[in-house]
Image (cartoon, rainbow, N blue to C red):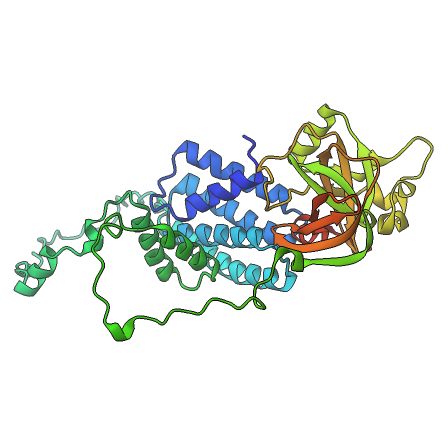
Length: 415
């Protein structure tokens, strides 16, 4: 079963807020496919890949033995929440990622010890040695009457007090909520997370965002309450003409910069020419194979009677051929703007982009032969889009922030 990156993230989010963890075969298969897809995507980021491996290991245990001990559910939800947070954080900070991994690994070690100890306690007793045969020459012992054990007085069950009866009869408003309601699921999840200890800020942020979207149906129909005169805030004066920033004022002149214009996942974007290491056309059947594997072997860029390193520009051109033939670069999926959630398996070209020691591949189509020249830039960040580039021919095109996507999904080459 193969699913896209965004589908995998949505599956993780759904399982994070789900209260019922009696996993059906279909849910288990979808979650395993999501973890496998993300492990393939983040195999170049060791900390995130290790967290996904731990989550997959605990999922295998839950699949075989159920949620025993209950801490297995809290752990896998915490691990998935960290992965979701790191995926949606466009700024890659290795120190932060390593810190999250170390904390999660400590809890994973404690969980393994608890699982092992619980399995030892539940093992059936081992059969003892067979009883020895009686000696015929031995003197028989005099049979003694069985001694009656003193009866242990049993206490009659105490009648519940009036206070306890009142507590049992009283039903809080939260208990009257339909269990299928999303808000109730989120509250139950928060309670279970409090029992598990510190789980980081990622789950809390996700729950706050979900709670904010839940509005009681009667809130819109409720009559507005009277507000005391002294509590009414004063109206804020409208900004003066000097404080208003027009779109024309956000556009800044910039040095003439050559851009390569192409279409990625159905969206037209531009990349700085100096960030492009190579552009290589591919056949549709080969494109589907690359998309399925989510990476491209650099040896496929070699030419007949030509060195592999000579095919590239930038830092990749300075690496030995023997080293390049062993490397695979990940196919990256830009986020933001109107990018599709599914990779374009009908792409006609591969574009290798490099920034410093970071490298990655974009599967694209409709690559323009002649580069455009950007003379003005309007900063307006949206995901991996840095802003809008204004070309000298008066056209406008979204400009990709190469370093942003490379730090999140690219490959760090330190040689």
